[in-house]
Image (cartoon, rainbow, N blue to C red):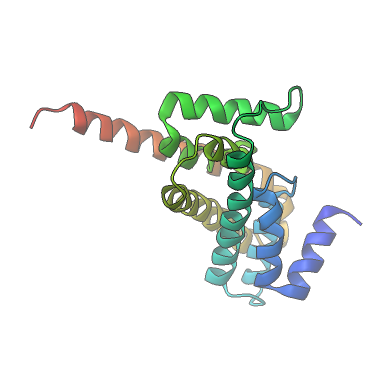
Length: 195
């Protein structure tokens, strides 16, 4: 049974709860393709079998809960180095570099808009013990943008979702990162401008 068929079966049988359940492990560092889950949730919503906003909310909520799990692991293992050589280790290195370059708050939000890094940024955020309320707000904002983009794309693509999935992921990530970069540049310019 392929991942697409499994995801489709879970969403068809459980609806929004299935979307939530599938998105929890994705944000907890277990490889579940969020793009596939959210696109198929959008296809289901486009067919009228699930409310579009509910699908987006379920995807976001599942991501937040999974992120709390990985944040807690990071907080508990703050003094241990990450494993080396794996995809997860490389993702953690990217997240650590983002935290060092932009600070924890910006890094958490920006990483939520990047494939792979979005699933693992919770671990370094936990390791640096970022305040949980701030972490949750930034995670919710980034995950909501991701869910809105992919569920919306799935609803628009319908049965053609598999052909547009990879392109949507790349274009969405690029567009969201560009928007975040513009916002950061404007914010820095405002801060640098004397009152």
